[in-house]
Length: 130
Figure (cartoon, rainbow, N blue to C red):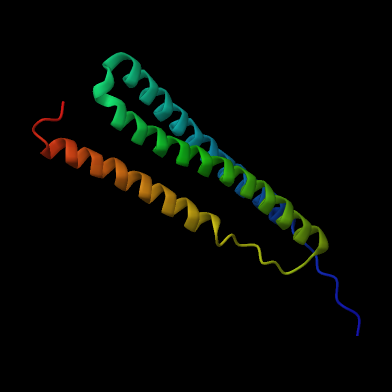
C-alpha cells in the first residue's frame, strides 16, 4: 500500500519562522543585558577603585554566562528552524517541539538571578558594605 501524501498548511511554515524570530529576539535581549552588565562591571572597577573588584568579577562571570547562553540560544534556534523546515518540506510527523532549550534557558536565568539576589541580600545585611 502506497504512503498517502499529506498536505502541509502554509501556516506551519509561518509558525516555524515566527518561532525562530521569537527565539532570536529573546537571544538578542539576553545578549544586550549581558553586554550592559559587562560594561557596568568594567566602569565600576575603573572609577570606584579596588573595593569593587570582587563584585566586578562576579558581575562579569554572570554577564559572560548570559552572553554564552544568548549565543547558544541563537545557534539552537537556527538549528531548530532548519530541522523543522526540513520536516515540513518532507511532510513528516515531527517531532516539532524543543525540549532542551527552554529548560537550559530557565536554569541559567534562575542561577543568574539567584546569584544577583544573594549578592543583594548580603549587601543589605552587611553593615560594612558600601
